[in-house]
Length: 176
Image 1 (cartoon, rainbow, N blue to C red):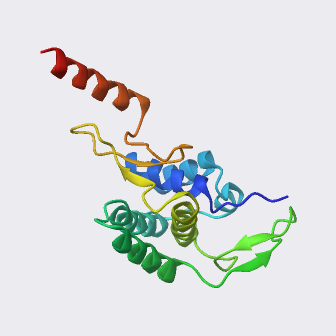
Image 2 (image 1 turned 60 degrees about the vertical axis):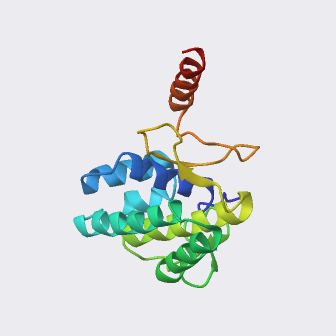
């Protein structure tokens, strides 16, 4: 069985790269490898400054999806990313580890590879878990993004630390 590289891991990679932007091509390669998303393909290719710039552009577009004011706007923005970064789906066994789907040609630069993963992963995340399952942290002054992978679909914070900080703030406001 081959795991789907376009699922939650790709969305979490986007969250990671937006929260802590990669500043060099080597750092981008490391972060992709840490995420496990297509890490073998990233290792095989030399990540360039052009790849880093392409990923930054895709992340800027992805943030528009996160910050979309309504469902239709979010859908339109995801569809625009899919149109820009993906191609017709195809079965491949390029690594000899099992047949799986790709939404891109096999030999694309790392920047396009990451943009495809993020756009397709986001579309699958929103379609499978719910269109509202991306957002910004509810803690005042934080603004970090999150991908809601919770069972209930009610995530509002980027981390347990922010959730706790906000709970303490609300408690202090009640007892004052």
